[in-house]
Picture 1 (cartoon, rainbow, N blue to C red):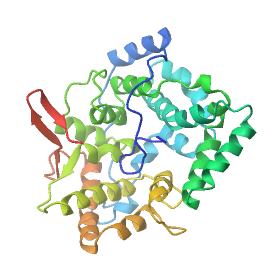
Picture 2: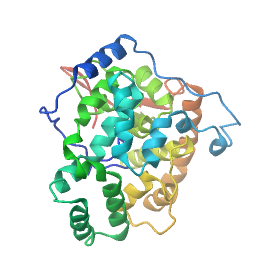
Picture 3: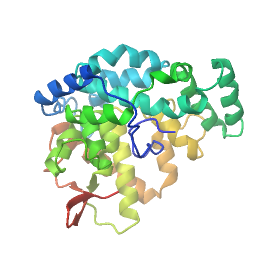
Length: 322
């Protein structure tokens, strides 16, 4: 079940768009207007306390993206989608991206349970399915069902997630542009990624962008594999937590990660990660995470000597490493 854009935390997204879902003329007009007015993503917020020594006390980048916060907190994604649809059709990039994320999150549930005669009968079906799941996975799936219940009742209201995400990318949304490069989405007219462009999008602090960052950027460590990869993935996750992504035991990314991992009650993302890697890897990752968070806040991720773009040279150009 696809639910968010986060690389370490989410389930795989679908591979092909549903070409049967049309885009309204108003949406296209809004998209054209947004593309004509496309601007660079917002820069980092001013530094607060000494982030090099007290990263957890620094201002939260995530707070600068209210639609992300609304989506994370929402218990009725159908209502949220309806409330922002007009803005998305008018070309607002954040609304476009949020709609795409909502439709992506609810698509499987709407398709699988939307044929039920009533919402109660659909709920009975998911109760049967989740009865065989581990407790944490069952709780998460039941919550997702409740959040998506409007689409289960009205599956015809589900729209194509990838269309909205592509339009959001063309309108300049940071996470949408990163997602387009990660997915090699050729219908998004962005050109090839470069270190300065990717770094600037990550420095926006948009939480989904922070979680996509390690799909495009890699830490410059002197470690051999698989240690280097373990440090890279863990460091980016810890940096996202420092920059305001909700990594508490109640946070969505924690709940998703605990679908597969054995998490004790009250475990947050940091605790889960610490239990998955060696003490050496975790200490190295923690040090690198602090450096990443400082560089992102200060807007110097591309010139701090920390990261490089993950590319493979080929005859057709640079292809992002998957």
